[in-house]
Image (cartoon, rainbow, N blue to C red; front, side, top):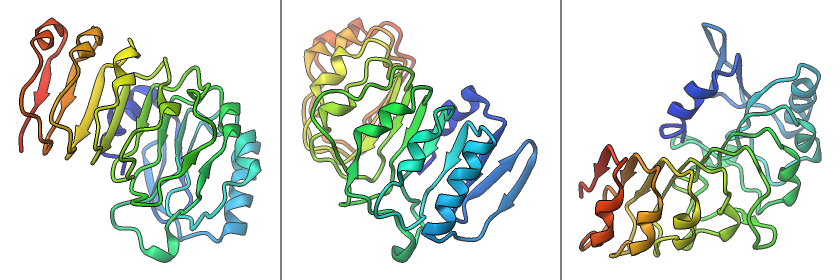
Length: 231
């Protein structure tokens, strides 16, 4: 679930990336695998993260059916994984139904992954955009939102990775900082002419999507360096 997140992780350069459920743990140049944690151990792990001022935390595949309130006290976090992985087992998958507005307490968050949650995509409380002023990258790969919630219309967003959308999320055209868009295996056939407003767009992947044609305004994307239209 982290494939499109890795470029942003390298930019953030967190000193510690800690994983709670059998995924990669990186401390400086060492790599360790941890055993899967119970929910109680996960809460204890979050408490340890707060005590040690961790800036990155991976809670993928922890079997979370609710997100503990203690998580929102980690205000120093810059990188947070809350989804699953493509190889996770059903008993360990996260299935929390709601992404609460309390996530807005994570004011320093720069990258958020909610990938590989399948048809259990969490509902975002309220419809207004999340107030996460420093969020730069959002990963929703293989977490199925037929229509992307407008709660993700976050002005600071620079990159978005998602797939299987039924409609192009037009609100993206109002996010001037977007540099990377991965909209793969989607069912929409057209891209709005307003995509030309994304003057900072450098990477666009529509791989596996059903695009009939690109709008004439597409030529105004003068900073575009990489375009993927492969079927």
